[in-house]
Length: 334
Ligand code: UDP
Image (cartoon, rainbow, N blue to C red; front, side, top):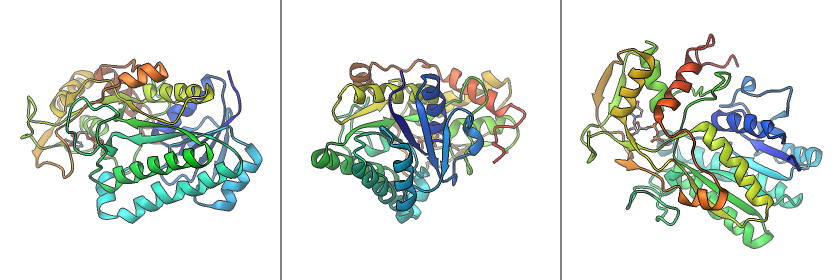
């Protein structure tokens, strides 16, 4: 049941656009704020929602959005997310992921908007000291991307203490898959993620997939990740919103399946889904990649009543393959 208006920053991006669809299907009233640096206008169902193009760091613009739409809650997706680039250009990440949201938070404080759902990440934990990772695992990010998200969590906790802002930090594991309709999906430029690259190799768009490291202490020597379907992430946001509307306190929650799959397993599954032999090259480790990242998702079940529904990466790969195989070839036109 719809209550107030939801302001969704970065709603034209990959995870944001899937969440927008989900919230609209739940009859929520949605305003998307996106500067379209990485987002795509055509990822948005413009007939069902309001789109405001602009930057969350632009104080006058953000003020006008709050004055016009008076949002009840903010879902904050807008961020840069290239880990490697964050290492070589940290200020870009601290500027966009940490400093820019302060403008948004100042507007929230002025307008007495006290519900915030934050796209955080398992990268705030850094190299795991235990698997599976629960929310009490030490937070020791090993790159500026993870650090920028961890620092904003800290800012949000301070805002809670000072003026009662209630936040849910959703710490995503490896987002993957696309909407089952094939209408929206993952379109990053450049693309760096495993599943879309494996599928691009299957389509012949790239020559091969390079496997980053085969000497990890895992059963097949390749890294293990917890792949969480983007539609499951979307449903978690709706439940986080319900949690805050019901008076929930600020909390951090992992979003993962609790299961891990290796790079080699993902490639083998993609060969089954596509029916194609995928050209593979074995390369060196990528800097900063832990051997294994698997969530303990128990708290999300307890607190939000959320559980991932798409547990098999085959389903993720099938939906991503459908998106890539569409007439648009997995590319938005804008
Ligand atoms: N990976 C790989 N080749 C690639 C891209 C990724 O072997 O071209 C591996 C990467 O080392 C990691 C896993 O696939 O172990 C998932 O990487 P991705 O970049 O998709 O997500 P991340 O774990 O960095 O969030």
